Length: 358
Picture 1 (cartoon, rainbow, N blue to C red):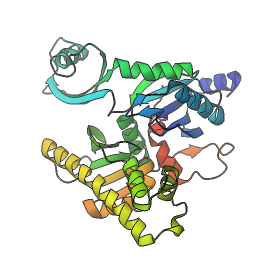
Picture 2: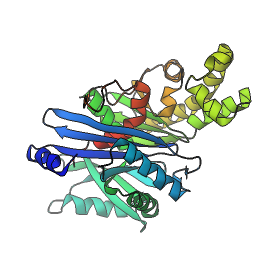
Picture 3: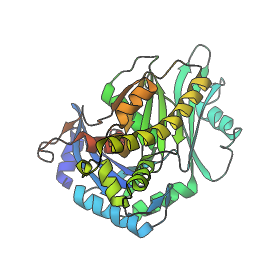
């Protein structure tokens, strides 16, 4: 967008937000323009990373990541500068929900930060702390607060790389929150007691975020993720990695025995389900709540054939693969053709960030 067009947009009350999601396998970018009529998708792109560029959330190859981010911006929208950057809940981010009373004559922030300092692991020095008030009872002065702490070393490593790629990270978000934001925007208002599990099946890790009535509750990690499926196919069919990855995407599937392939995917699904079971049990025990009514999937693992159907049967829940762009208008000049659902779900976290008005 030219400087003049940007000025006119701001005069109309229109702003633009860019979400940048850097995962272990790929980087995703989404640019959204916020108009009075609602958000409009202006740009979207995905750039695969070289193997072992990021391992377990830790940047191992800075030059490769900078190159990938530069290429992503160039291919998607080379005018992009300011971005919202997300950190993974699993790597370098800590969180907790606390209940406390708002002391009379004391600012909420002072009360919250004092309470946070009394709780491990929030009393360490090498973190950046933030909070959000989830609920407030004016009559009893009770407040429910979500505390979030990011390890400075992890956060700074990503900020430095993004800056070297010519971008400016103006907000740091958390991928679990961005997923929740994308989901809530997509479905609108939720029933007050509806419990939903948002499951992001990534390359190295699966994150499960629980919402109740659309409000964030907690996040748990499961070690089984997309890479487990890949490695199992490699062993079962004696395949190189790239061919196993292609097979999970449906490439050359007709060259393999369909029943044997289905059993291999089902076996991997069972491993994933065991971890999901533990996360569900922990949440239901800690919150003293009924069963999870809905499972919402996103990420590369959500696109593996048979995974949504298997999880639905196994956990006896409604399972949907989130298309975060289904309710969002698209610039017809930039997106003349529909975006495949399998691509849209990979953009979920980036969409969730881009939906935030800055």
